[in-house]
Length: 286
Image (cartoon, rainbow, N blue to C red; front, side, top):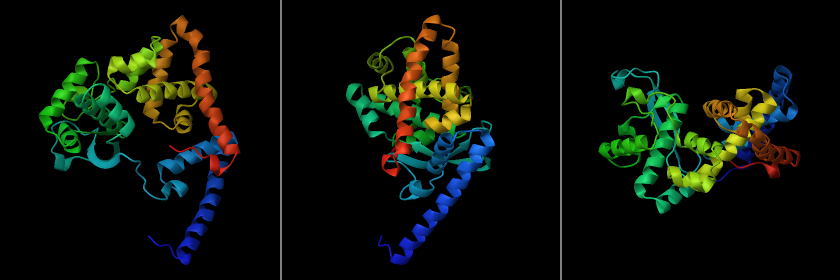
């Protein structure tokens, strides 16, 4: 699209206006929550990212591999006619090229599909919606029987896939990331974990890094929502990881490992601080 001078000027003025609002927002957070200016900037940056404001609004809101889908609100009772149900517009990660390709190469196409099923079902649940098996079949261009078999296979592995079709699945369940962190807490190496749950090594390492960041930021902020904003994950993920952390603290061996875990999380926090101090050129790409 060719941009005229008038359009460029309009965008420039909009950015200036945004910066004014952004500064006001930062000041409000700093004054109202006793956050430091740095913490307030991180929160504002995350808000801009989530709501596609400013630089995050230039271009596509969706990341590569993501899609918009409409699913039934998770509070709707089973058996209620679809036409009468409240629907939610959600964002699903249909494809994660590196991770999905890795699983398909190491294991099988069905393992890749199972990873996609679990990932999207959990993403929907975290957005207060539930996918049906028909939804998953349509998205993955397969039939419902295949989806049903995949869900049964995941259940054998200890993974509960939250779908609308089965009321017993509607709950926190167990996800790949929970399995991965439990194995990490049991002193397993990332390669062992990936092999044990037939998951990509890239994803397992991300789960572990995120867990460490959550533990560190929670110790620093003592606030679950602030931790979620700073780390860049959902509040549900923060609550899940902190519950695992609390349970693990009963183990003396884990308590001795906490300093190491927090040090790993601190690296990420300091990296953001460095980029903030060195201007927009150092902005983190997510």
